[in-house]
Amino acid sequence: MSFHLLSRFAALLLALAALGACTNPNDLDKAPVDLGNFALGHNVVVAPNLTKGPASRDASKEEWIAAMTKAIDERFSRYEGDNLYHIAISVEGYVLAVPGVPIVASPKSALIIKVTAWDDAAGKKLNDKPEQVTIIESISGSTVLGSGLTQSKEVQMENLSRNAAKLIQNWLVRENLENKWFGGRGANSTSLIKAEPAADDDATAAARAAAAAQVIQEPDVAPVPQS
Image (cartoon, rainbow, N blue to C red; front, side, top):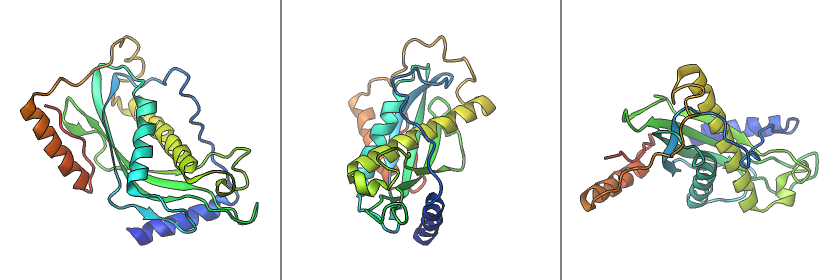
């Protein structure tokens, strides 16, 4: 796993020497694009196989989990559909650019994640095989010479996580249009109230906590089951 990711990172960084990113996550002040009857249930982020790529700053599993969880909440908690769907993410590898020689050798930051979407009502995955997503930092006036020169580690992680959330949204929109995962185009237009999980009694809460602990240790990420 580690060798495979390092090889991918090496190829990715070479490509980024000439190419820039086109992801624009700065649309959270606009109405969310249609996702049918989608409402965010559980937002589960783990990092059991986290690998640091070459020429990278250090970042812990806990830091990546916090950054990705925040980005997913910001983007997907806006949806007010009638049905709950869970998003499970495994952070696989990253590069957080360090200062280099401007233009010639300044690296770009990158992130690799795997994503699984779950239908709460059906109690099953929507994609049997996790969707692998490769994310690169957005190019701006402050990053064109390499974000390692101009940004802190925390800002790099925030930008990559926000880009990741946007790419996950794009993937879910495509699947909804093609495979009607969340009810198809326009299904969300009459949804006014966001669905919420039912309150747990003590026994259910204990069972949920035990299930969550098991989920964190499983390489195939799964959400906490609903009662």
